[in-house]
Length: 239
Image 1: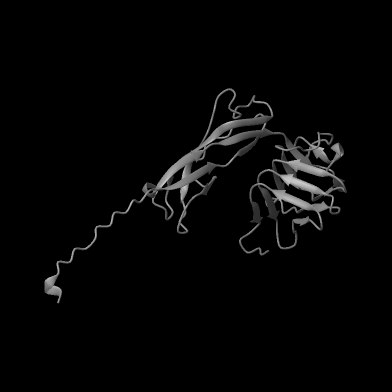
Image 2: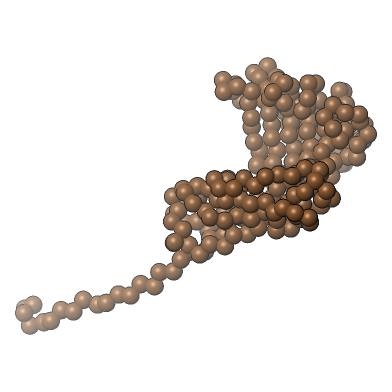
């Protein structure tokens, strides 16, 4: 019978350690001869790894370096300025900061040239006659390279740019179409040997229901390091 026994419940010791969380500040792509103010608190310019149980982070504080050699002055040359974008103070969302060991990883400021497609006809990406260094300016600017900030149909005239067969194009960021002026842009890939690498975001602006910005990928290769963003002229527009 139970009266003949003294029952002692075992003591269980649990060693619960914080999970490892890394928060990465996104790179900033900016044009030469410009300075960009820090977004500060409430920024979504980050990525993360290590969250558990489908938790998420609401926002972080993002700070851009300033001063000579930061990449964020009007005189810094084209290039990559390492570790000049910092993240801190993750907050909001569903995660609890005290449950994690958080490491913040700095991003870079990447300074590139502005390149605008200005040839009214269907133009090849690899020709200087396609590009200008100013919106609506004269053609003859150098062909975009990795880090450059590219616009197709940014002004008042539709533009079509084609990546030719056997050509590997590159840029830092790419915006196609103009919502403000209801102008569409088109980017075409000729065949399977036509390639474009965009290090950051691709933004496709759909000006209106009758003017549709398109990427004619076909068998070509488009590599996007950031996000593919869709923007519309009005809330009533549909994809």
